[in-house]
Amino acid sequence: FLFALFLIQFQIIAQDTIPDKSIYSIFNPTPRALMRDMYTDRPDVVEAAFTVDAGHFQYEGDLINRQRVGRRAEEDNNLLINNGIYKMGITNRADFEIAFASYIFEDATGERPARQGLGDVTFIWKQNIFGNDKNVGLAVMTLLKMPVNSPVSNGLYEYGLIFPFIWEFAEDWELGLQYQLEWLRQDERPEAFYVESIYAAVVSGPVIGPVDFFVEAAYIDPDNEGFFTANGGIMYNISPNVVLDTGVNIGLNRFAYDRYFLGLSFRI
Image (cartoon, rainbow, N blue to C red; front, side, top):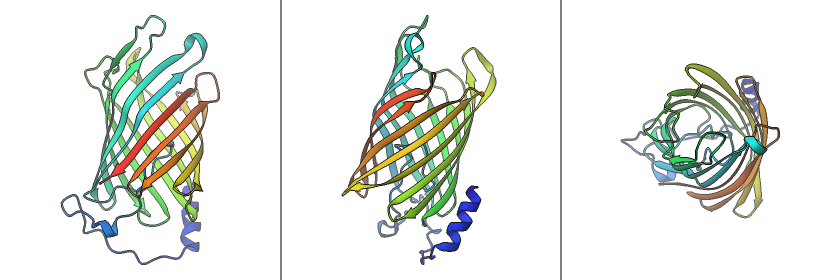
């Protein structure tokens, strides 16, 4: 399906002359005049299919993130501060990312007391497959989550793959699709992995002036016990290199999560 969309778009768009940027790397940064528009993996679930320009740094993160998982007696409330991703462009088509939350507070649930601390660290390699400087693109992301010595860590290594696809089907209007596959572990059975699949689709576009919006649907399937979320938010483009955002994820069934966030992204 994604490949079919690409073929259709490839046939109908005019191919602009794009400078060869393959010569640029972390050691030979892309000149600012040749940098692509800033794309972020937030605030929606669908990640950007485009990488950070070679030799440049980009930060994206929740300044504050409030989560609620489950309902009533099973409810689990978490607070995350500076839940950020730190990115560095390595080549014209690849970047390296480190993600972690500076502070997590988890409410007491059942017999478990409240706990707080630094979040686990996730290492990410994003490789653009095609379209990094065009209006349609596909990427693959590999993830490795490394546990840290923190009360909120599960102490386990976990892995994942993400396949984001982006299509700018009209000026400033984009459709994003994503499939994500993660191999996770449960605290009760740390020796065994279970597979979590995530499917998401998002549409984003302009509202007025520097303000954009997004609406999104996501289906999360942890070990064949799936749930849906409806997501939405707005982005305020302070400049081409700085964006503020806020939004919500609303769980649509019993064990889905609700999330409210305020975020910031910038690049240098």
